[in-house]
Length: 564
Image 1 (tube, one colour):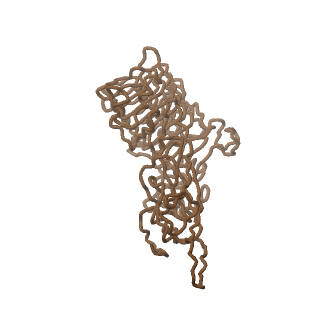
Image 2 (cartoon, one colour; image 1 turned 90 degrees about the vertical axis):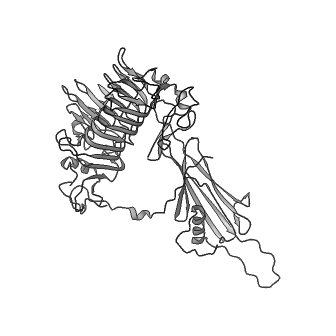
Image 3 (cartoon, rainbow, N blue to C red; image 1 turned 45 degrees about the horizontal axis):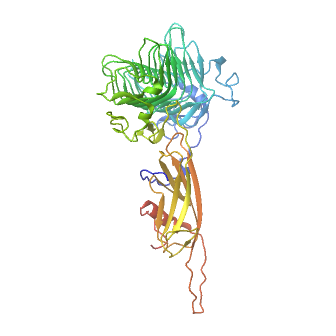
């Protein structure tokens, strides 16, 4: 049986109350901000394309009807969008944004940047296709944030996916910047809860700089985000190509990163940067400098803390190549961090320091700990010192730590460059009365226990269990059974269902249902001629309320139709 963590109760919500009517397509809407949150709804690719004409987020198609009195300040995606517009499984001239094979035109440019909010609403943009050899800044957005005018931007809650997707390009005779989301991000831009699974290719005769999320970043933050797409260019990083005066937190890359010059599992080059709770696996392959975290990391304010890499790291002979860092300059610091010496092929890392708990170990040694501050798995060393168990899930002794993002564990347990497969959990009910397994309940015949037994091939998973009776659902992370007296139950038939959900990527569920009867106790023969026959009826709301009070431990604010 799986071990469950903490308890959480959720008040049932009527789903119909949350349904928002669809807005009119394109222009001419009656209301551009239906939910009154200051963000204009983006319902189609046409709406997305129109953002380029409204970079400050105050209007769409020149209209702002329905925005708050203070005005709108961004956009929110209401549905998943797909650039394979005819759904034929091909990207070609029959798709609306093919544009002669160059695909999507990135929103904005270096002089006209996106300076508002884009909230993906936890939706995806699928099959984003860009192939622009004459562009300098390439991504869904070309450029975001405005340093000259001290204006920032926000991109959040969005995924880029699709087997037909690609972001590629780079202008000759200049250094080009290519990223899945943004070519160039600056001035306090925040990117959070975003993920990319598509390949990024940075080209150009003077060298292209590519990143799975951003090509070039200056004064930005990336939080709770990840990359699973391969990245290539002259300078390439799993998340960012070039990172300056910025921070990356609670993020990772699991991908193949290749390039000619500086190549890193997370960033190619960084200066004045902070990395916290980050990991990389996959392949880092460069003709010159390479590192599992970064190829080059410079300046004394740069620090990496709670980082590990199990990437295979390959670089040029005579160049700076290391398990985490190719090189550290100007007192840049890495602390409480590790790399796998065997999978990386690197026994050293730039600036390594036992004093700072920055050292390498074998993959098996890095898998061994099941909690932070481990002193048992590697003699005379502490593995994962001060790592936070609310951010990292250490799993079993044969798994690398997994990063927890929005309650979901992302893990490449064997360091093979692919996130671990997930197996759906299963749940089955067991009904007992007075200690014996039964199929029906007899009133007055002892206490009753209804148990949901959870099984999962993934031993380190945690689970959430949703109990449902009639139209009421109670969600728990600890309670797998409920025990109650049978004395005051109501005769009838009852059906209880349960859904168990795990916390590993991709999140999976299992469900089960049990139907049982509550029956009256056998009645001894009555010498009186007057005998009242028992009847069976629906359990209705009485069992419902009793059930909720027992499982939640709370007295609901409704008057029961029976007495305890």
